[in-house]
Image (cartoon, rainbow, N blue to C red; front, side):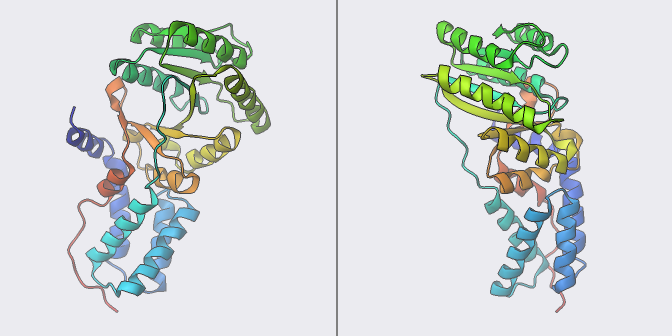
Length: 311
């Protein structure tokens, strides 16, 4: 499938986010004057588009400075400046993973973490990689069984234990099995409880220590799965997990069913962590590589006429 086709698919699937965003922003830009009220309203619009207060303020203040420097008055030029500012904001370098790699996949229950692991397993297997999965989410009822079904469907080996077992012991066993079987990628499903941040951090820190101690010869890639439909809550989750385990990348699920996809920009900006994949459907091929610059370009497509703003 060509990159152009993927881009077109992303545009189609993320229509709710795009339409919601562009309509709100254009309503401010094309019907406002370049005064203090304009910038206040624009900032509020970005916040309502799930960009968050910090990111919204940064965009608005940067735009204010650039308009002052360039003496821009044309409405389409203002839109172009906004697109340029946001594009630069999301230009975060993606981490290059070296094989073999241990991928710790984290995220709260209900975000589609286990399904995402299955899609990743399918994607990597289709690329010719030898993939294994570890069912280290031992607290959620039927989590291991769900991953077992997916592993069988995809055709990859799985390491699992009984419900309630120590997650780090499952990861320990999985690393040994991955080394013995010559796996290129080990995907570890970890527990996703956020009701007690202290327990979450201790649990992930223990798993991390096991990986550091036992994973000689493997690189490590920590991947967070977020539900895009939760908007700002996704940003808060990202911050919490980044405190618990240094994140290397993010997967945004359910991007096709929400108008809150703008939170992706806030997450990249505030955490400086790249979004590697987005889920735009239920099928394995609906987990696509994410290009943040293309995402911003998509948000600004279909702008209005290049009319002059009033002084």
